Length: 511
Image 1 (cartoon, helix red, strand yellow):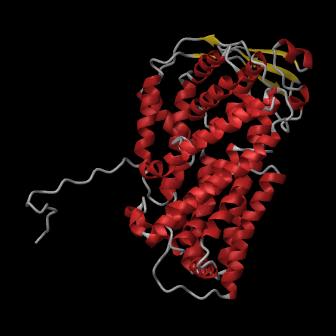
Image 2 (cartoon, helix red, strand yellow):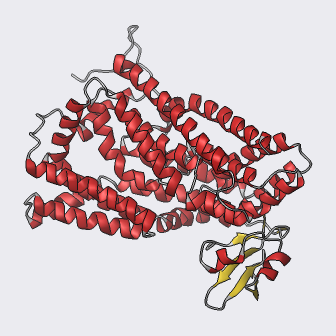
Image 3 (tube, one colour):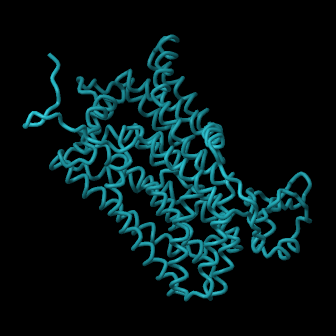
């Protein structure tokens, strides 16, 4: 006889409401963004882009017309663009850059049902490089899991760190933060979660600790970028200053911010190890244990398994070197992991049939993760097509006129928090906004590096939680709902807001 879920009084128990899935959250935001394009002001700045073929500056006006100017410093001076000419000629400034004072209100372009559907499709198109990387990674991880090499390695590492598991949090967070501050390591970390989550779960933590060690490390590193070419360098170039200006305050912020994140994760992790029932993601434990930490007997760490694991981690080392030194991006990274997966299958002596079937099965497990990337990007597509991003920037730039230096820096920080939601590309936000915002610092007697710091801190703070970024992709890996992550991260957000304002005021005081 089928049992019914009833209360002690004999009445049917109410089904517990669950927070919507990552896909539903993004669909809701997409609809809200589309509705907003019907009511929000719309407009555009003229954009300047260097055309290497003609050796001219192409200027695209808000109405879509294109004119050309000679690619020389005189043209930049006439347009009040402070970036140096060499930065355009050598490709350092390779995206269209907003021209100060060129904003024009234009007719609205409200986004409807058809636009939303097409935005979903185009969002997937625009993230196909990331999605393919995720598929190849999933295939490679299938080899590790099927062979037992992963379980053997995790078991050995768990025994080595027994009693000092907090060291894992410290080491991983610091290493990822260094990647974030030097080259903006973010999407590249997708490959790491399947590695670190089993390590932390076996050590007695929950999967949220593994997620936090990587994601918070990446986020604080990019938030406090020191030499990151995709944020501080390109933003400083757009402002017409050397990216080393303000370096001292940023490196100090990196150290302090990383220390704060480490302590925060250790505190939560210690609570979970002492009382697993206090885990915020307790309902996901069964899924995580089955997918990442099978209770089957841990195999012995044989020589073959050691070779496989060394090869696996060397793949990451080569990837980092390629991104930092050789200018690699997802095409090259995907090719690297594909070759490494083939080599791994050969070393494991898998047959051709086994290699193909296991690879496809592993890639199939990542379909949801890959699609999340495209759905998140579709929100930006709607906002861009709806012509509201530039209008929002123009409105906010008017907020800071005539302010005191301290208030100016703080308001800039909150402006970039808002802009960071609508434009979650660090380089895209830099080339669009910095030419508009940086000159405002001159009017209040501040050096332009204060605007650069506010830009990084503001967008970086939003990067910890924005659903249009990477966080929902990560949570999808372990079937954790967004509300659980928000509950975990909100206290840290308050701490980081105080941290950011403190460092901004310190930078103003040093002028």
